[in-house]
Length: 396
Image (cartoon, rainbow, N blue to C red; front, top):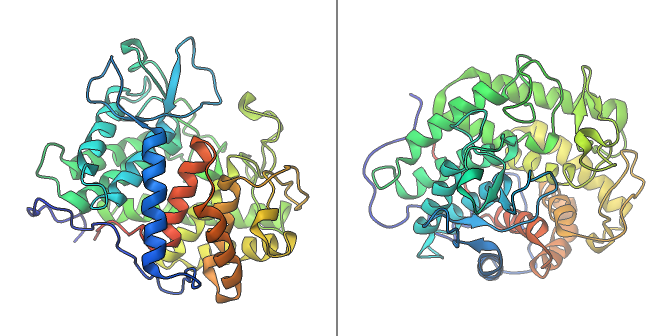
């Protein structure tokens, strides 16, 4: 039988923070107690929430959003946030329920905004820009990463609160998963860049390869497509790494072509280093290692462990020496340590007890890092995972 239980839940959370899961074959920081890790996550969440979580939209009363900078063209609107940030916020809020007694209200407000700011290409998906203007609702096309996290968060919300309340989380998740398949899954079992992109495209962004999300989508739908996508993306990753990063395991911000190769510089006019391991690809190790932790896929362990071995050697085992950007051969391109690079590299280290000192030192760095929306949001997601407080949504 596939699908999730729709039986009535109690009024309180079914997975209240902290869950402190111990994933099979995965290490945690062992120089601090679990209680201390939980407290660090709760404290960081409180900081993150007060800094970035907003509900001041005059054009959408009751709508919540995550305030953050954008890197693209807002087409004359004053951008307040993105679908990417909306996805981060919805995942975080569902996982922090219980610690935050207002979590469900916040989550429903985030979902309200996600639905109001629908994509111009597929209204079941979210447009990529949030602006305080009714004209922005339905104006923008989508971005793959935001929708993947939003759909996945709905599965977390269903597991957390059930689907008999104000929002039928399970039904909304299934609607979004169907739309994601329709707009983002290509004819070659890849993941494209948005609902404006071709279904025959080989252009893809590896930070959208959210393999544990796809396993969750399969658990809910029983649709073989999601397993085909997972298998294809692992094969693509390994083929790419064999050709372009055999010593590091790194992947570029964008990947094009068949066989897969780094996108050219200035791809999509985003920034120059789109052919390198930069601010998009920095997120990849967390997405990869989570698939091993939650679904036991050893292909994820192999990739994450290779990256961890390389970055430990590159930095003499000191996460503070990580730089914000690398060429695929491992040459540092960046100049300083920032959490969106550091935290996923630390997360990659949970694959083997040989990385225990790396994970311990990395945790201490992460819990004290406070920078900006992008780094702080991804840092908190990584802290939730490393501490065992990111749990697998209920499935088949």
